[in-house]
Length: 159
Length: 105
Image 1: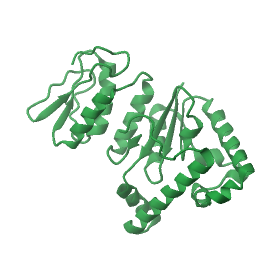
Image 2: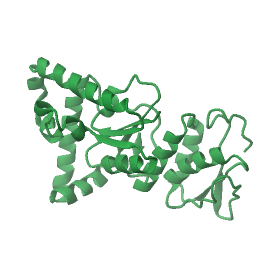
Image 3: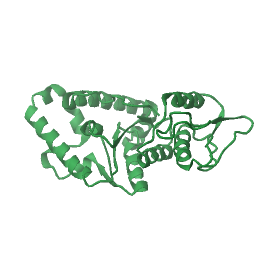
Image 4: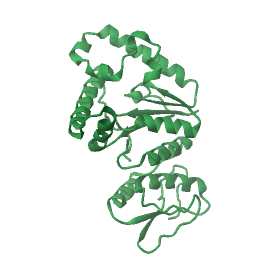
């Protein structure tokens, strides 16, 4: 049985890492975006989710509960298929109590991430730094609000 | 957690694949600290593999390789490498790799 869950920060090349790991191991590759593709109301781009103000989310208890149930059950259904690499924002949250799952968080230094962001979004390096910082801040709040954990909680070693 | 700024994309992929292939893969914090210290130095490092321990060698090479790139001089899995002048050798220590306790270094 092989399940690898890669939790990635924005602009860290985590997506590329996940896809390449899946290719090399011959595993199925699944991203958060694919998971939500057919979900209708939950198919919200991460960027938009991150723009939601947590106090507003707090008032969306019902939505939150349904979102979590949906993503969790969809993910588990796919993980049961075995030999899967899942990559996405906070993926490890859903499998934190699962033994036998390789949980990896891919991070990178701010300047490197900003360089990637600047290239992808066509903005200056300076603007990209601000953008990445804002995304991180939003992710932290989103993670705390939705999952009750810190987004960059480190478990295990840093390599 | 893997810091992709310190390890190349290729190295990151290799490390995750190495970890995935062996559920018994563990490495002591002492060895990690040693590797990290070497990463900060200018020394060229050779991963030293105990002869005949191909599996161990592979995983250890993956860890060292990921952290040391591009200075790693890899000799191939399972071969015993000896550092040349100007290089530092690093071998697995007792406690690394789970069931492989007592590896002679």
